[in-house]
Amino acid sequence: MIQITPQMRILVAVEAVDGRKGIDSLAALCRQKLDTDPFSGSVFVFRSRSATAIKVLVYDGQGFWLAVKRLSKGHFPWWPSGTEAARKLEAHQTQLLFAAGNPETEAAPVWRKVN
Image 1 (cartoon, rainbow, N blue to C red):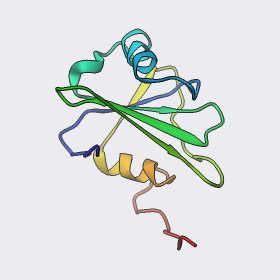
Image 2 (cartoon, one colour):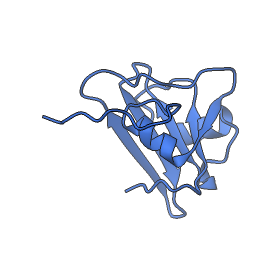
Image 3 (cartoon, rainbow, N blue to C red):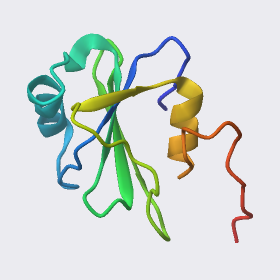
């Protein structure tokens, strides 16, 4: 399990990626596009082109973790935009993003009952 802590550096890639990319391809994107060492322990978050899935890549000192969340309905409504390759988020903002919410809101998103 990937534990997101307030001390972690969390980078969200602005540009969408091919959903078929694995650990090696995403690590190469970290180096080339985000200009960051994938072995740094930073948490990297990528979005699929369809915005229905996100991938989280992190190195824990022994190896890489790759987690995927694909929504069963809808898409991730918020994603950063701009000219920079990545945007930094805080741990609590990342939790909101993982819940398909808006990290820029002051309060947590409305939770809905899972059927």
